Picture 1 (tube, helix red, strand yellow):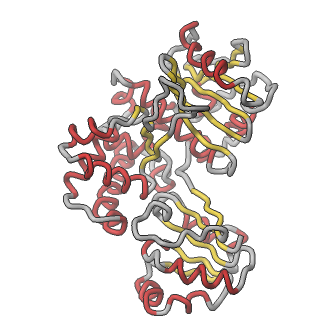
Picture 2: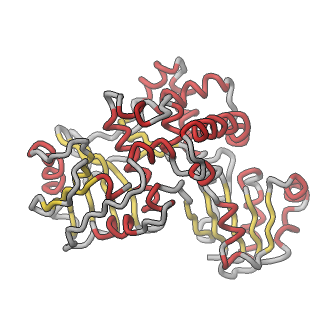
Picture 3: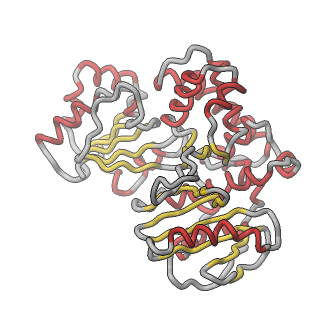
Length: 390
């Protein structure tokens, strides 16, 4: 494609990537964080594209520039001639009239997960193996940290280099403050920063749950329309993700609500006032935070698979926490804190397989649990230790 757009939340490492990747070293680099470059884009946008190939950083600061990109590509179409980065989802930004359809490849750069940061690529190999019709029962327990510690750290490169929980908490608090005071102004109009921050905290406390927007608006003291707009801004800024229910049809009993997840577990934990491992373990709803931790890993895996997606499944009375889809194959994942697998723990997976097995080549069920061994549960279902994904 002539244009590649790398997008993701601020501080995920997009600028570092496009400056240091070997294929990018000989490209001209411009950034709309540079006020002189931003002024030139507003006065004479076409002039920024006179020298190709070019990399333009933080393009969301002036999305009208995409019109010039479109015109340049239509006149001259060479693979990789324009590389853009953005700290906002351009498709969701209000007022963006040009999507570069047919001209651009969009790549989302998610925050790191712990396994990725420490170079344990075998975790991603394991997830890929879930889609194979046959896979070896090999569990990996070489995680360098507990899942609680990884959950609290999140995945931003700057914070993962810090040593103490106190330092990480200060970094997360500073990130939230910067996001509220700077980034939001570029994404949309906010009538009250205090109201928006309260909405963020209320949303963090609902991670890994079905999103009831009316209930969230009431608890945050906002109108439903304001709550809806603020959630859209969080999604546009890559702070939250909304997972959707995987369905075959609109049969009675299907739940259509989205499931709320945070893109970075560390930010989520800070907003929920959890700062150390004891804070996590002591909560009655600890299972939801474990689910958020697993999502961090699955999100990082998905970022390197253009043909993959993440859903959940709920058809009363059954549900499954995550469903990974790649081509014509499905992997259903259920998260359990217990160190033992009971019959009730796999009922949702059994119902899932019964619903989808006639429509997909693979419908494997995975139970993530706190035991130490990978186990074959029969009927194409496996028990996998939490540490294997941490």
